[in-house]
Length: 135
Picture (cartoon, rainbow, N blue to C red):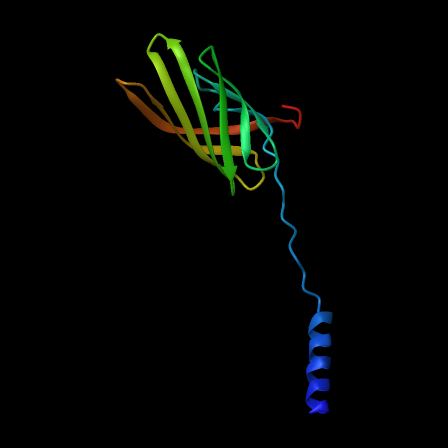
C-alpha cells in the first residue's frame, strides 16, 4: 500500500512540475478616434472612450451633427446607442452593432436609424486614425 501511495505521490509531483504555458489574456483598450471611409461625403467620426471593461462612451459627428453615444463591448462585439434630435428628418434613435478586429484598429458592422416613420439601415465600417487613452 505504501508503494502505491509513493507512486501516486511521485506521479503527482511530476505532473505539477511540467511546464504548462498559460496564455495571458490580452486586454484591449478601444479608446481612440475612428473614421469611416475617407472618400465618403458623409464621413462619420467617433471619439471613443473605453473603460477597459465593458463600457464604451463618447461623441460622434455625422454630417455636421454632433451626438453622444453609450454602449457596451464584449469579446470584441460592440453595440453603441445614440440619438439625433430636431433634425430635418425629425428625431431619430440609432444603433451601431459591430465587431472590433483583433488589434482594435477597425470596427465594422451595421447601423440602424429609426423614428416613428422610417427605419434606415446599412453597413458601416470605421478605421482607427488616432489611438488615445484620454478620451
